Length: 233
Image (cartoon, rainbow, N blue to C red; front, side, top):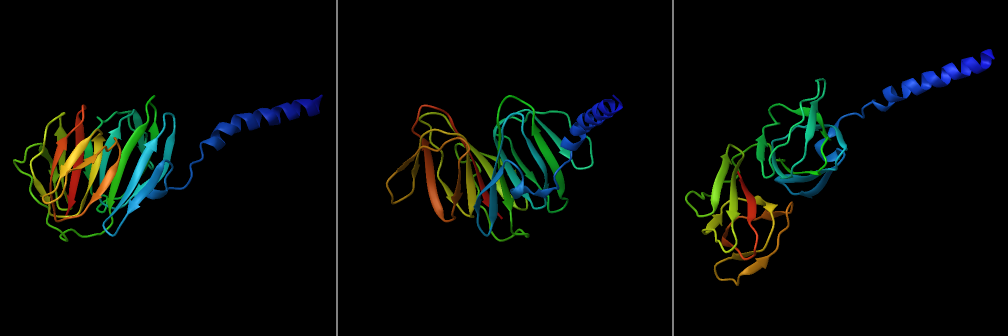
């Protein structure tokens, strides 16, 4: 009888210990090694990571240590927790939100939990060269369709919103950069001396853009198109 009681006590103790074991965190990893953070593009200037966290999933502790741009293309209720701190309150940033953080000045290790019913999708662009001043981006001031989002020592960013049938004014890409699609649809790009090129970019897609190109963009579809474009410095 005593053996049965002892065995029952041991089993109960192990059952109580199981949640504590499950809470053991994996060591922090670089951002491009984190769960649900998938590297999809890299060159000598940028490294792009596609972050897609399904509902109920957690991207474990990872470290950001280089300057970074982010474009939110799929919003969700998320909880962030900086290593060594309490979890932050749940929040939902608006889809289309664009951010820039100078992690080169102060790195951060955190994890992100998707606590809502919708997938979280963030396009993260890391600047892999350490010092600005390599390029001079163009100006799109007073160009129809473009709204400048920010302009800092590393990058200049614009938002382009076109309703069906609308066209943006002509711009010249002066520095290398990236286009991120927030609202997909159908567009036509016009480059002097070339035939118009139709495109059907989808939400969450991204495109590397070389400098030296003059172009206009026209919404040829039936839905609103929203693009975010960056030129490096």
